[in-house]
Structures are given as C-alpha cells and as structure tokens.
Image 1: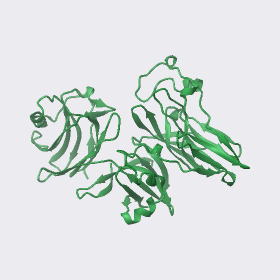
Image 2: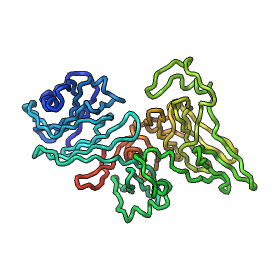
Image 3: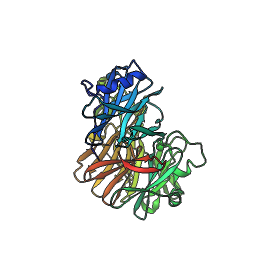
Image 4: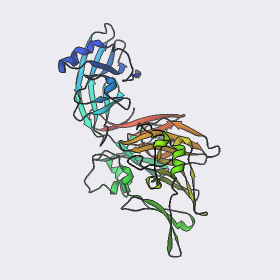
Length: 435
C-alpha cells in the first residue's frame, strides 16, 4: 500500500494545492485559508488530497494541534493528477457542524477515509467514514458511527479477550498468536461477556452516549494477603477506595497516604496540561485540595500494587505515583519518579522486571493521555512511549504488550507502539485495522 504522508495542519507556509480552491469557494465564498491535511499516492499518476478550508486563519482555528471543523469550516477530498497538478476531481465536500469539533485523520487508503472528531468538551461525536472509488471518481457512501472504546480485558485459558463497546453493542476481540485480531461471532462472544461487571452494569439500563467514563463502573472487591483477609473495596456512594482488613470479626481501614502541600509545591511548581502557567508563589493549596485515590491495581506477589489517580482542576489536585500495599507490614510504599508527577495512572501491569504504567491527565476539559511508562524494578529507570490514546488495561500475550484504550487496541512490538481501531466496512460489518 502506498505510504501515507500526514502533514501538520498548523505548519506555517503557503498553500500549494491551489487548484482545489474554486471547489470550496463555490460552496462558501468566504473561505480564504487552506491547509492540506493528508496526501496519499494512489498510483504513479494521481494523489488523494484531504484539504481543510475556513474563513478563519488556522492559528485561530486550531485546538490541541488539530484543526477545528465547525459550521464555518469545510473538508474536501480530491483526486489530483500530478501532471498537470492543476487538474483535480472532487470526491466530497464536507461542511462542518454547529457545534464543531477538532478533526483528526485516523486512516486514509485508496478507497476509504476515516476521520476522528474530538470535541473541546463533552461526549465524543461520531466518527466520519467515506467510501469512494478512484477509478470512477465518485463517492460511494458516507457512514457516521460512534467510536468503539476497548473497555476491558478478560483472560481465559491464557488468552486475553478485549471487550469493546460503542454505547449500543459489545464486541469481543481475540488477538492471534502471530499478530492481528479476530472479532468473535455473537455465539462465541456471549459466554465471555456474561458476568462481566462492565457488561452487567449496562444491560437493561439506558445507554449513555459514550463508554469512556469507565472509572464509574463498579469495582469488584479484590482479596489478597494471608487468608485473603485484606480486601480493596469501593464506597458505592462516593467511589472512594480503601483497603479493609478483617481480623477476629473486626475490620480496620487502611487509607492511601496523601501528599502534603509542601510536597506538591516542590514537584508541581506550575499548572500543567495547557492551563495558565503560574509561578509557584501564586499557587496556594491546602491539604483539603489534595485528593489522591487508589486507581488501577493488581494483586501479585502477596501485595496489592496500585496507581494513584486524582482530578486536577477546580480546586482539586495531587501528585502522581504508584506502589504497593504490603499486608505483612500493613504499609504503603509509593514511588513518584519525575515523569509521573503531573499524571494519574489509568492502567498498570506488574511484571518480574518492570512495572508498566499508562498515564492520564484528568481535568476540567476532559481527559488526555500521558503515554506509556516502563519503570525498571531493579534500576528504577523510566522509559516513556508516546501514546495519544488513554489506556485502561494492560496485558501480555505471545511476547507482545497489549493495551485496551478509549480508541482501540495498542500493541508494543519490537519497542514500538502500533495502534489498531475498530472500523466499519462498506457492508456494515466491523473490522480491526491499523491506524
């Protein structure tokens, strides 16, 4: 397949694909700014072009390094001859909506275009999928569909099964030992869904617009330690998590130790994640604002390993960290390398040589990914892997590390992260494809 060249939509410089401008101006004469979002060679003579057009300068229409696609903006998909380059064929013009969203090119092939729509706030809008035929130079079909989130991993017989949802249905996905994925037929999927808290919680209820708020799904009590007398529990009213020890008919709570304001000021001198950067002397917090909770966890080696999570806006904050509770010593041990100060942990996996941590910032304008960290248990060295998707579970299978994320499945292969999305086909079925 020809290589896809994704161009930075906010890159300064003149617009060279001027032959497409008349198509936009017929639809909206006010458009005056253009950016080529993607170019794909379909053969030795022609390219596919995806172009953004707006009356506004792109510097005023960009959100988080993506371009805004609102009621004033238009996306155009064209087929362009290389010689002469001025000859173009319009496949589709897509006006934005009110309210709009940022737009990201998720996938472009010689027959398909997939666009992610990312709102500034609120639920994720549907993806936009175009099917087209470059030989006849025509659009075949447009499909708008809710994105699938991979929300859970269920292990059975040493094989991980990924549970994906789109607020209407669940899919069960099995990785193949040699690579790739298979979506299970409904008859094979149902036994794997039965009994799962994320499945039972939604069955029979009014479905939300998104499956992304998985932190509110009920926590199954986790037992560990001698005779299983230590239990990680969640208060159903407050979602507050604590470790409860049961001995001789009595119970004792073990609360996660909280950072203090002096520690916070020392490691987080500036407000993070795009909010106003203030000097440390201007940031005043007290102990009541630090609200760190037990997040993802794994009972292993006789201990409960855990990652800290906290909301970082509107008067609440915390310091990122991870560690374990030792039931023999009845004590928490927490590690906070600099790479995690600003982040909550969204997923965790403990292995003999390393701890894997997926990071997330939980803020007023939604959540954003901080990537994947590998923390070496012997040296405490940290390595970061870029991952724009928010991960909620991590597992290992056939020598690969897999992550269940908001946008699909990520796989660490040969020290490089590959990303796969759940897409729709022209026939209306689902498939797993690389982004």
